[in-house]
Image (tube, rainbow, N blue to C red; front, side):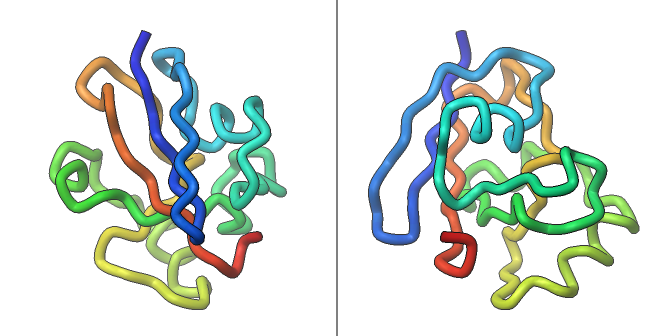
Length: 106
């Protein structure tokens, strides 16, 4: 099974088995990862699943939709690798992906 690693703002890693086709947000919520709230349930309307994708993985991701880009405009500290985890689905190509979590979502 593919693996995703969420890294808390304090550096604590959470290495999790990640079923294919599940969103990174749902994987985090299902496994009690603090820092990913998923308040909107994955409908891309709240940005409480904001994460910073490790730069090595960013080129492998699908393009950001207009809706996701709009939601990311409202996060406190956006970066070039900011993404909403609800918009990223696990796949074999993403096995080992690393997502850093912002401090404001604790």
